[in-house]
Image (cartoon, rainbow, N blue to C red; front, side, top):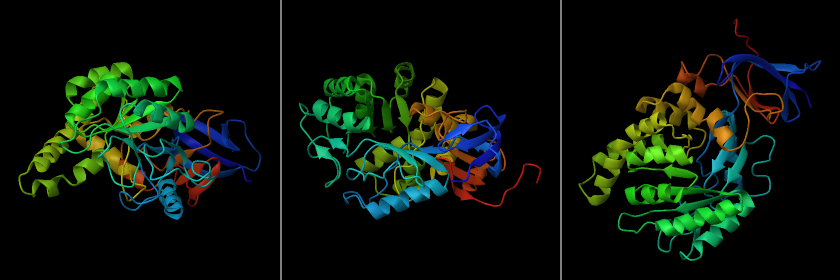
Length: 356
């Protein structure tokens, strides 16, 4: 296999680096005959930390062909790592290790209370069984995903139950992601000390300091939540409309406040079509998050949170290359010069140097 080489300003620090892909690891040791595939502004790969590839509609079974196509879209957009906090089924053996597709971590199927969540997806279990089921899942994959709240009239998972889930999952060295789009569910998740809060719509901003202190990350899926806001505003005045319009309107300021409070932000796109993590970065910036922090939530910050280093010798050989600094021109995110994954070029154009 041809050894690939990239050079340029490595983010987040912007220091000039000259890297060679020694298999699936970066090295600064020059390799004779290496192919210089790109020069520019280098990210250690983009990350989509909340995506559910492989199913067309809620409740559909996992489709392996669709899963591969969804992941290909992620890779072409510059995503080198995904986290799937919930899948329509157990993924095939190639998931996360195929050399042309993103690395992946996942939480297996969702875990919900009886009568909640989409029919055909996930496990519905009694409160007494939740800790055991979540720990068994996390022991297999490293993560468990709990649906803490669902419909407006539903009771959220009680705090003692969520605390027991967190304790059981942490005992097997796993982590807990929790879906919440209502105030009570978000409050319970933070009180239980979960590892990541997914969506977090209607979260009380007074809880942000505690999240930062205990290390609970927020994956706001902001671009998805706000995308339907105008349409929801045009619907008749009903409890669901008031809940969604109120929560979605406040969500951008909540995300900006979370960044200011020191909460770890993770960029995630949630639904179809895939390969749109750039939209989430731009939505965060529009809400008031600094471009550096918003981009980090989709790259170096998210990679560190998920256990992968950046553009340093010995790190995994992932990189997404742009012509200009994407922090000063977010449009750059739509047109990477090159994408290298596991030391292989999954996207590259004609070589262009910074002087061109």
